Image (cartoon, rainbow, N blue to C red; front, side, top):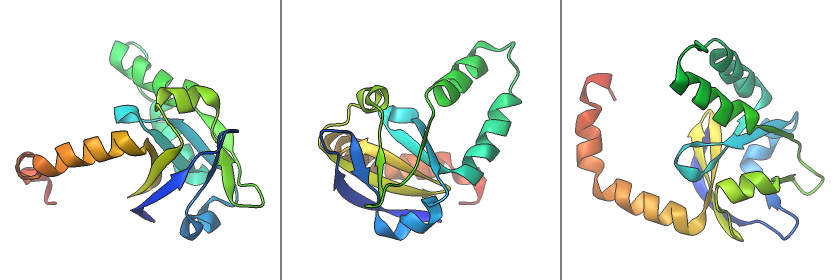
Length: 143
């Protein structure tokens, strides 16, 4: 289970150290891909396979499902931890998420998100401000 919020830095070669508490879950490898809201998603191989199966089952006749599958699958890259517990984020993914040096890694139970620190702070501030409306919209979900 991934939870929490952690500040880290991306070096000039695109290497990012992941929070040490998550490293054991990612030792067998991971997949990083384009996420929603201009962040990156990081999945364990097990969670990625579950998602990829669902994406592959989407109807290709619908434009939105094709677009979403392309966003997630075509943007995906296998990554593995180096001896220092870092992954290399490909340049095209760093550009997509507008990652600068300082990033925030957030745990969302089944996956991690990687955000540019300024983008995360803006997103978080707006979401916190609107939290009552968001909670009300989720009323029927038993959350």
